Amino acid sequence: MRSGEARIKISFDTEAQAEVVHAAVLPEVSASPSNRARATFKREGSKIILEVCARDAASLRASLSSFMRWLKLAIQLTGG
Image (cartoon, rainbow, N blue to C red; front, side, top):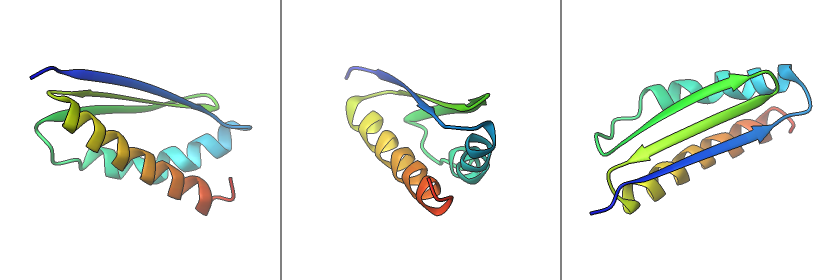
């Protein structure tokens, strides 16, 4: 079983947009119940950075899919 890591940076036009999306998705990241993957989710100015480390490829894919769905929804709901 191979472990995997991913780092995703999303740039926004303004820090305010990044803050709203970050605040909307942060509870989902914090409440992630999986013991096969862990994630860090932070905002640096107008960028959001998501890092996921997983025990195996399937866990990495599943975690990334969930996080990307939450991010896409938050961006759509904020008019982005």
